[in-house]
Length: 311
Image 1 (spheres, rainbow, N blue to C red):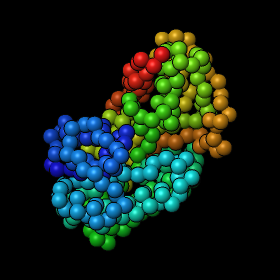
Image 2 (image 1 turned 120 degrees about the vertical axis):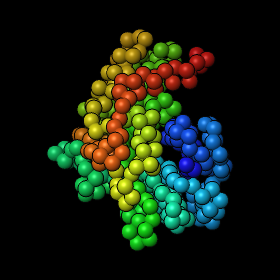
Image 3 (image 1 turned 30 degrees about the vertical axis):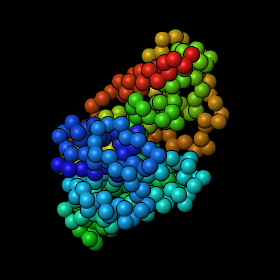
Image 4 (image 1 turned 60 degrees about the vertical axis):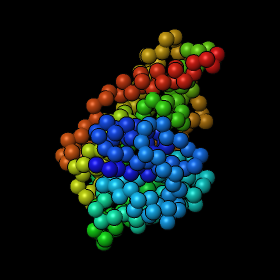
């Protein structure tokens, strides 16, 4: 099996390379000129906005499966740079779909953000729920997914769309909650900050899945997913941010307290976000296996190692 990962230099890309390589696949991966890819694979420099370059590379590799990860994935950045977000997430996706050969499967990675404002009584939320995106990033992902559906129906392209919920693990940026808490704990243990963690709203409940489980889901969708379908990918069980914090602090080597930082509070926080993941289980047998506690422990160990020598 020959696979191409477009946009592999990010957090998920390295894990996906490792997952596919371990399964014996020939892995090709793209990155921008200023980016690097650590896992062993065939590397290619590619800007997804260069339509001719996208087509040329896909024709050269002739992959069996393409995983499209390239995106402007920050909600905050999408408010500041809406045009850039739309160009990368929509036009970039169209460039890939335009170059997609008849016999190549495309796994188009979207986000649980596409559901937008979710009422608590609709959880666990199914793929059939109406989409109500609440930010520009989410809108761009909804648009890319809808275009993917059109290419599947109108041009008979083999496209699967994914709505991935929160995923975490070692190496994730500190702007994400689990990584944020773990970095603060590691800093406290090293004496780099006072023994107090700053937090936002702790009552919100979110679905967290280990990135290693997420990429296993992506592999199985490439192998067994039904063309034209959309799949939620997540644990299917939400936990409170308070539970995440208490678990992380429980792994600390020294006592830690916490305080609410008004700058971390959001004007409108959805109380619960939890996906129904019965579709992916039915079609592929996938379910999340790594406990959230293990994810937190591994992320904390990553930050401890990362901060070595920074006394």
